[in-house]
Length: 260
Image 1 (cartoon, rainbow, N blue to C red):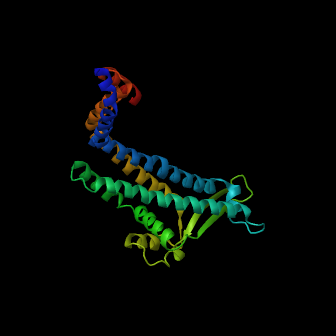
Image 2 (image 1 turned 120 degrees about the horizontal axis):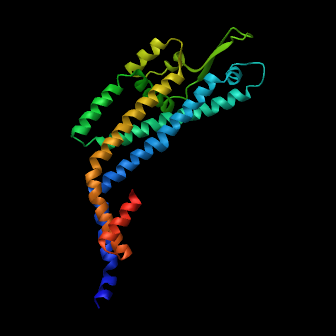
Image 3 (image 1 turned 135 degrees about the vertical axis):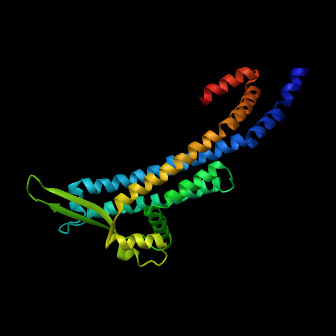
């Protein structure tokens, strides 16, 4: 009779166990941190590396560099390159804003030491002109126009054993300046850059800044949540003992093995 009662009570016990897990602050924080990890590692960083790889290719492959400026053949390779580059730049800029919004939502209601340290690090990041320029470039791209992408190539000691070349993808500062919504920091950056701005060093520096800040945020959130996560894992073990029909100790061991 008791066994029959236990079996009939199983759905209710399981529901209560699942609810306890879902409402536990350690589990809620764990899910939020997982979202930040995905935003950083699965979206922002791959978009950054994809864009940087293409810019590095244009800067180091002499054959490609020449194709990007030649005017004696149909510009098939140049058109393909610019198509891919425009898409990757757009994706990178968008993923940076998404990541910033995700982290901002996580930090906005905090009034603890982590938030204080985050504000300090964010203020340090904002000392870099690349931060403002890329943020504004995203708004330019989203609300105004896709930037016109150019390319510069110079070759020294041509047709000698010491021949070398310099190749960079560029954005025209004159064309960018036609937009009237640049921040004061970006306006200064554009003025000081001259007629054109090289994209590769900006993307490299900006990506490093964003990755470093947000990696730190995620690591600190994980450390802060570890004690609460231990409590949540005990609730998971209790749920698993209901599912498996085992004692709590066995369920805890199985849960630990699967989460290590």
